Image 1 (cartoon, helix red, strand yellow):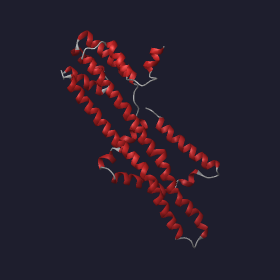
Image 2 (cartoon, one colour):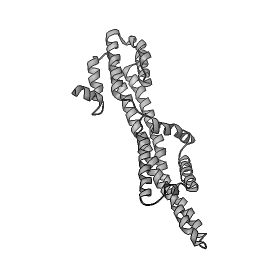
Image 3 (tube, helix red, strand yellow):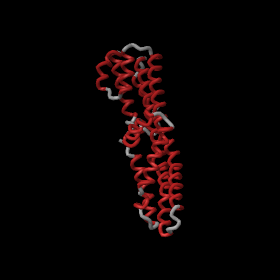
Length: 257
């Protein structure tokens, strides 16, 4: 689990509430049910209207992935592939059938099975690359919903403020209520801007980042399997794969040590 998103959102809310308290305000004053319902439900409805029903249903999984999901370090994946390359070099490609039982990564397992079944390297690469492209497109769509919600939320908040001000104008005969009503009217705009910039847009960016990391690891797996299938020297396989890792990885630190 990578807690960066949860910590970031909590930190942003702490900063907002701290600023309110230091200015003499009360955080409880912004927790008004009508603007909260309007902004959050209205934003969800607008996002739903701009996409397919299946995209909205998938939001639940996207929320879990953004808040709780993480990507395992690629170094361990490289080590696993190198071990498989060593075994294939010593005992042949068919010997990997037993070793596959210990492989945790489903994409690596699928690629190895294709290689063991005798799939041509070019065709194997095409099949696996197609899966990477499909994942990248699905992730892009999931991230687009969060980004769209980040765009809709401030506007929905303004609608709430306009509705609140209409209510203010209806009560001009009662001046003692105007201050409270005007303050309540602007709460909707606050929640619209706040939710967009503290929640929806950062979540969309996090999903994009997760997708980039996961797809790069899948491409790493493809390169590894192609080299294993070609019977490449395990040491050469290790060098090739580690060259694909981002700077500052654990592999770089080991080599520097």
